[in-house]
Length: 626
Image (cartoon, rainbow, N blue to C red; front, side):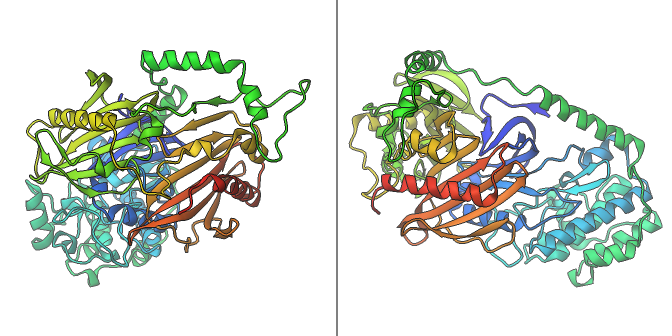
């Protein structure tokens, strides 16, 4: 476990991030803390996958299905955001080594431990398949060992068994070569039997220390999976009896997880299923996590200019903010008598309208896909992907990708690199991509940035390209004349201005903080967190599965909204309302999302959802007519 890097965000949705757990082909995994104190493994998917226009919808749909998976041997999905710049998924955190790490550190497992492993994996797959998923990447790194058994992770981005496009780019096979099934290696349709083949390969690794199909290269491993028979002569008889039928080349000849459990028969109860060395490794991992939780990373230091601005704002607001809070005009809101203690002071980062062309009010409504018709060194740029209000992906004539972000909900990434057109520049130089960004004027929480990233047609000097294109974007924005969003769009709307502080306090109680996140989302802290997000994405649909405590539709005075609600524990309820503001083309729409997550609260689910409805009704009058 490593500390967060300077470019790593401190938050993913409502999850506070503490440390980096690891990285893989799909993204990075971070240790997070939910508002109710539960630890979460937060996987942030690489942004390059978001370049696929259908990825976010598939990701969202499959995460919804994955919420149905439950059981003692899986790490349940807690939350996800398919519309974030880097989509993320939060699941229950498991403080234990992977099967691969345990075997590498302590050697092969004895037969009794392999049988316990087989029982846990079969039970996990039974739950995953029952939800309509195929894991597709059951490998040693996705099996974690805990003190009472194994846990299968990373099924939240599996493809649903009812079909659909592949989650990866064309020609790329998702999975680990030495542990995938023959049909997966050949790109054929997958069924739950594919995971059973992978389970058999895992049992061989656990008992011998190596995959039965591992070759000198990935292509060789794939060839072995499809064409060679594994040598199982070194396996103990009781392990071979389990693994051999799973490794049948014909999927129809493999047992189901339920049949495997029958073949195993009842196992004797044991308090410690693994060898002592493995339990010692588990204890060390648990201690590492406890140390990180006990001493979380220090808050990031803000730039001197931002710190001075914040100090000045505090001096100005310190003596007047209570009066502003209590006297803010609103129907039904009255000022408290001078002798009555008022609500706690409100910290707010909102301000008067900013006329600066690089300020939030001017940038909010800019059509990001019309900022860069061309750029130095790249020639004509063609907009290709337009998912969010704040980002657009352009393609060069050479097939390279450039992503322009204006006011995205992330702080400047990378290391300080001087100035660009009079603004502090940050550059993140990675192996396959480079990001150059500058802060939005007076809003260091939001950025204007350009990312040069493409694996197929690389830039000769991606950082030089990113900086040159960013400079061109800044100059065009300063000059004005960039087309704005069409009439009726949500893009120009300041979400923090939709609900006054007085109204928010009447609905949710004392407000302690109001802060924007990027240019299109606002948060009110009030015994939990209320957010209003204005987005462009896929049209909302009613929840049709049983993964929520309650779900349905509600009438907001002529506007139909979909709601979902969950109670995470006695003190935490999450209720979300989503409605379509206006359609955009055939498959997209502009949507409004209002969400209330309580903390240390006695509110029921119904009471929480009623407050969300009141908040939504208060926001509606400030929205433009579609």
